[in-house]
Image 1 (tube, one colour):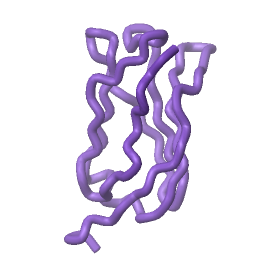
Image 2 (image 1 turned 120 degrees about the vertical axis):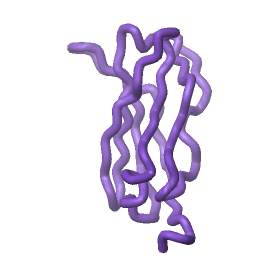
Image 3 (image 1 turned 90 degrees about the horizontal axis):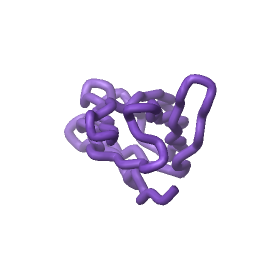
Image 4 (image 1 turned 90 degrees about the vertical axis):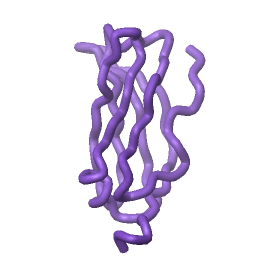
Length: 102
């Protein structure tokens, strides 16, 4: 399985967090669910939307991200299908406070 890095290095708290057209060739969205777990000061879990072409989209509303405290977080992206789970990507992401919200 070959994928490009999905998660950005930084996310702005208070902005909409959207990643579109996520393609994971071995795990099509028509068969699997893509999940994101973020752990840090404000832990959160998110599920991507499945697109008809087999890709995924994350769309986390600004009303959710505005409650994320600034700092370093760890994340894991994984796919899930009934009794199967596979890690797609792990890493670190920095949550940055938007100036007008501080």
